[in-house]
Image (cartoon, rainbow, N blue to C red):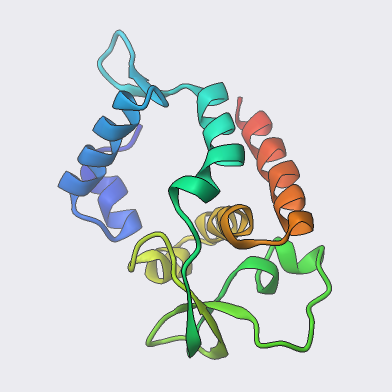
Length: 154
């Protein structure tokens, strides 16, 4: 596992916030401390929480028309599977955003910056948004794609 400082830098968070997140994950039994003291993911518990509990723990909050970074069905990998309507796309509000759409507030204000730095993280966050804010079809697609990605990491 990378250091808390390295993770914090990648995510745009203070190392102390990353550490606090790991402590909460341990308390929630999503992570355990291995014999070497390093945090280890409890893969099946994490998968169950992600696929079925995330939308309740992190409800979607929608806003007004804004500029931002596309998410949900308007960004990869969902946009390759969903035919977009003529409505404004969902976006994470971002002062540097180039797409006009309807605000879908991200998990944390730094999400657009972190997503711009890391395309793989961007895709995972888009799938997460599909779980918490998508239609039933979008949630089902996101569950399938996330399950595949978690299985590939095992």
